[in-house]
Length: 115
Length: 113
Image 1: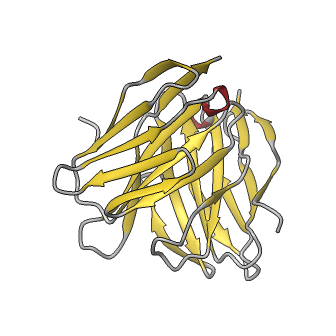
Image 2: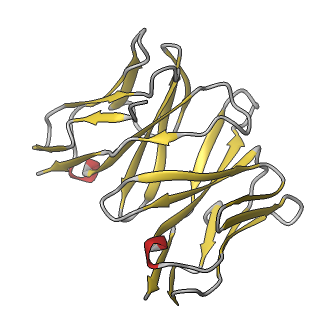
Image 3: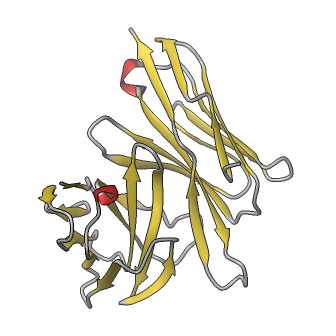
């Protein structure tokens, strides 16, 4: 079974631009979660999508948004980029039904640099 | 004070040593996760715990719900165990209609041959 894939792996943008990141979950997984990782703040939860609906949201401004398609693929968008948005963005997929067997599988991440 | 505190921040061990990484949290939780992150960013979910103890190979994770504390143990450590180990707790948001994941800052483990 193929793992979680994220594209692109690296991205350089300038302040004010917007960016879209993509995540393809493991086949059969219906939940996709997004995380931001920075040296200063560590890992922070952005949001989770399940069956095309946002099920949970972290404490991030509205510039951060996402969506999920009917095939469970998910995209994350950041508008009006700021220098502080430079980070590793990770997505993780799971079956989505909770419980001890609902392990999250992480993708390799997208490294975003904002200049 | 952070909701999730890990200790130590950095740990250096010799191959074969028994390793313990601690995680304390201050909120009520529905589950606790231990994650492993190797240089380059790849994250692997090691355990998800809501009570008791779990074992997988040389890794053991325990949780004490009353004391709000979890430990990750590595027996017979090996250089390939060198990584950042991250504790994360799953807790319900106010109103109980949603949950959030809060992460510790991680413990950098280096195992020397």
